[in-house]
Length: 462
Image 1 (cartoon, helix red, strand yellow):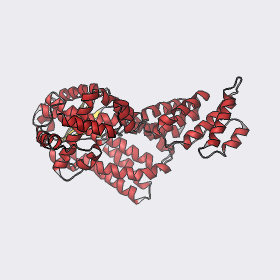
Image 2 (cartoon, rainbow, N blue to C red):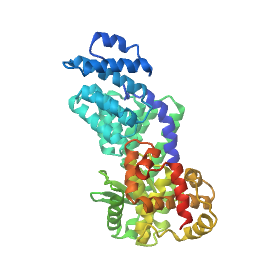
Image 3 (cartoon, helix red, strand yellow):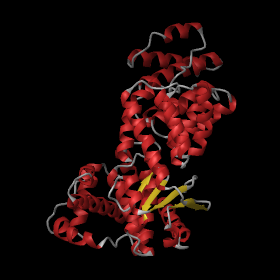
């Protein structure tokens, strides 16, 4: 699935530029004829634009300033933000707040604000602005589509289907909307509907790479249908659990008990409660490897956790650790909009896994001990965290173990020095659209280079 998602992202990036649902589509025009005429001149950052904005500020904040003078300034501030849109949200936030004060409840300003937050990856806050505009303009299909796309990013797939389903009536040939309707249905296990939307997406494009990616997605949906054919499912208020074949007989009645223990542990530790139900699928082993195409003991994809039951159902503790690991990935995905670096993502997942399976996050897997002692401590070969992606993708099992061990130990180092609250701070900052460097400084006061040194010193003292 990871390979499929990579292909689709590469396909969709250029497509998004042509999508009918567009960011920054409508600028705010100045209110006075003089400012409107000058507005067209300023198309680059620089002293001239800054001087013009200061002149407009003098007028907008003078005693007796008119509404039109305030709108003139608001229009130029939005233009400056647009010219600096590649900067961090924090660098533009003061300008955005000033614009909102000058033009309170203005639909164009609120839409632009939502677009800016969406562009920076803060989908939850973006959605608040889009929904405000939707309340004022309930028939605006651009806003309806943006609500749907934000819902996809937040993995609220039922909401995404509701809003994108309305938008597609206005934009019936939008590859972008059709693809995400397929994805949303796929994630909710409505495989027939997913295939139907993806077939329409394939018909809506002439790009051969897009067609190939859609064909792969359709094949994956058909494999999922085949592997879960005849399955049973049960749900509570947090999880929907699917049992393939006779796997429910093997698990007995422990499933929800274990899942609820895992839920409380992980959500309390990471200070985040999902507002969507998580799908957990127990596959027969041979079916799991057809679907996941991965050697792993289990995997998490969005709000879906897949477990090959008979490949390792050793004990309740084993299953608890396995589910805690994958549930943690799901929470991190939801919390950060999939923006967490691999080493921290895997590190926190292992931290939660060992806490669930062994009773303490400090009690690591037994096969880690010799590598930690011989290589990390005695040999001084501490993993560079920026190399973790390469290690985890290596064909060498020992390199993969090094990657996982380095991720786990670095996460323990974070917890030892800064407490588990550091996880919350980092994930929260990433969810707000901040860079990982900014998130680390928020949590530890150190950038990554300094944290790497700190981590290596910490390992030597184990």
